Length: 178
Image (cartoon, rainbow, N blue to C red; front, side, top):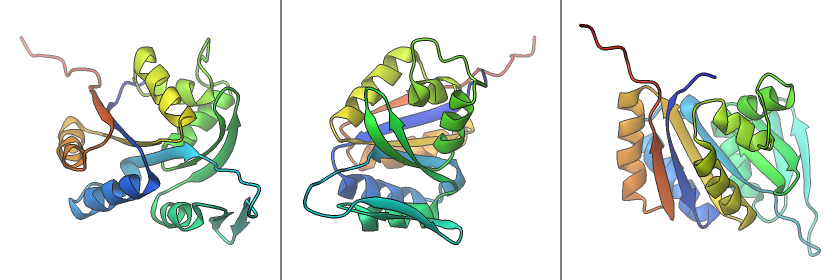
């Protein structure tokens, strides 16, 4: 398991999460180190679908413009059906973490695929449970990982966007020279 520095924020609405991503981008945070996860909304009133067009994934449904913007901005996008959580949409490095868990590169144990993906970068199991509950209640996770300095800068920006909750997860501490 590779422990990385990360900050995870939970937002009540897609509008709040979108605002946070724009603030992070404006603040110079490397978007290749940013991920977003939310539930795929279903409705009986409109078509919901996912498809690829060239190298981009498209989404029809309630939050089509929201997800379409992220899939053009962030590296990697996916749709997963996760038992206990339901359909989720993800963009950013979190996609690779989930895929690695699904392919067995990560010991899943009692964690689901999303939890195992988050655990693989050093996020503690008790925090993962909170994040999965947030997703089940239709909230959005915003994850930034990187060096301690990058994550601290992202944390300061995220704090100013007033998420429902956020947690800093430090990676392994550097060895101290004697």
